[in-house]
Image (cartoon, rainbow, N blue to C red; front, side, top):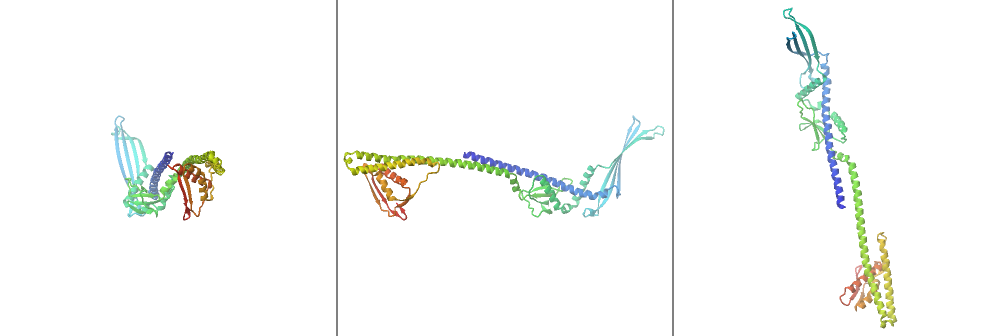
Length: 438
């Protein structure tokens, strides 16, 4: 049963530890997911601001500062149909100069280009009437102004290259409040609802974009931000959770509480069962000892009664009224003692109900000794021995139960008679030592 209890506790501990490890892994996954989203949102936020500021300068109403045209011309001869096919691909580049103060960088101005692509396909019919001249029979023109997705891709890359080139200060690109809101929102969406501190590092140096109490630890989580066109960056957003362990334990608190409650119930039931088992063994041992003692205590009065009866039958004694009266008195006393022992045997049933109370009173030890001597005196005389008393104790009062204490003295005297190899010679002496009696 003990092994089963230890096994149950071990299994519950292992299960709680496994659950805590799983929660820790899930916590790490949720934090990394949230930080990845924060990194993208910071990039998107910065790019949107860039586009919003750039858009007025690139609108169709503004005249470009300069233009450049690139044309590609390809002609094919279709001799079977007596036709010539001409393909033209024209790329128009419109250049705009943007004031440097717009980006707060150390330069006079920045060039941005807007591209427009036009494709023309013309088909000419050869004419033999006019010295081999050609007559255009069809023309297809396609004007491609580049879709928004392609524009965004190019503009985003150009802005990353621009910022990377001029090393734009991090505190000008993003604020502490903005990062705090992004991190808090995404962590809450991922179910990570606990306090955190963060800081943006440039390589191994902390920047101004940080919370006051941030300390980088082995449990901090980092994600690169402001990636360049090569997906590289010297900036890293680090987030630390001071109450990480407390939060993890709170996620499995109900499991821990239930495990402790059920384990406590099992331990309580186990302890109660062990207690009852030990109690039953104690009661059983008490019963066994009690029966053995009763058997021993019955032998002495029975032997005394038999000796008294044998003495009365003696012709020399039967006419001596004084001796007969003495022996009859002894028989009566031993009969009372046996009756008292029977009452004690009946009381043993009260052990299981905890109702057995032994009363104690102030009694004279000398009187108890003399009573015990009277009970065994006839047995000693039958063995040709003697009992001498030298009761010198001045203070002989003790706190005891007269019946049980008398039985103790009788058993001691009976054992002295029983285990004497020759005639029993018994001396009983009492004296006071301090406040005690020996």
